[in-house]
Image (cartoon, rainbow, N blue to C red; front, side):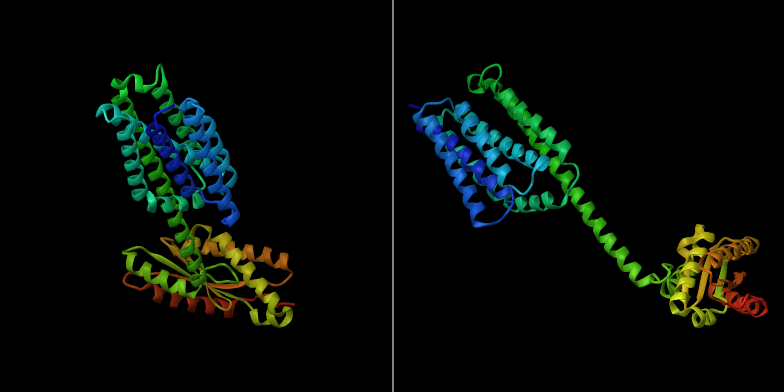
Amino acid sequence: MPDLFAVLTDVTVIFFDLLIYSMIFKLKRDTLLYRALMYGGCGVILFFYFAGVYFWEIPASLAAAVFMTVPSFLLFLTLSRHKGSRFLLTFCFVDTVSLIVAFIGRYMGILFQGGSVWTFLVVLSLFSILLVMGYKRIRAYHVLLDTVDSGWGTMAFSTVLIYFALIFFAAYPVPMVQRPEYAPCWLIFAAVVLACYVVFLQSIRKTLHIQKQNERLEGEKHLFQLVYTDALTGLYNRAAYVERVNTLERERGTRTICCVMLDCNHFKQVNDNFGHHGGDKVLRRAADAIRAVFSDTTEYLFRIGGDEFSVILPDCPPERAEALLADLTVELEHASMELEIPVSMAAGHACTRPGESIEDAFIRADANMYQNKSALKCRTPH
């Protein structure tokens, strides 16, 4: 009959293996039934392994495969919330760590001539330390499993290769217990494996950190859109206009800033004749025309109130501004034909003079716009 302490050592390894599985895998359904199936299945695995090795005298390696590895894989694959690469990586990782702990225990027993009792104590101590140190990290790993979607496939493939490499080197050409002089080489390889796992986990944690940063940036972007975007037209609003002007004022140095003011012609008559819904359509179409013409400066397009719009053109000469406004007139004519509602805008522009503020240039552009508006002969809306 096999040495009882040797069998107890193997059972201890399996017990902690199953315990870590039950902690690290999240159940598909966190119900009493699922927990009963998990713990009951683990109990059955332990019983059959102990009976197979101690009473039926099946070789430990064969009993481990038949009564532990395959049944535990199927049990937790059935009950676990996570499948595919995430499950495979996690299962092989835990089994690899257990394999390393068991090997260290056996090697210590051989090295210090303590036999199976010493091996049992070393294995029990190492697993206890792992559980104490890794309890909080298991919770963090749950977050990784739930939130990180990429990177699992490649790491799972690498983990499977590492897992079988450890088993192969420990068993070929003869079991390591028959050639203990090679054990230090195997332990060095195991240390490299564990270091690789640390890099894998850090990589996943960095991915999670980046994902959280992206989510936070998306939230900030959404908040920015709520605060600084005009809901009707999608252009920036007056609050954004004030902030951008102040920022440009601080940073522009000697740059020339061209300021454009725009105002829809006869907008009150459009509302009277076509209703406020028609007026909204005109404002949205006017905003589209502004975006199309001033596509190089989309961060400087604003609806500052009612039917009034403004555009900031950094480093833009007056001639270029006039050409763009001519293009805008053509774009608005197309809009009029599409909507079958008259759409036109009065425009005025002014470029900053030496020592003049951007706000003063906007005041001049606004005055030019009203001067052009009064002189412009537009079609009367139907």
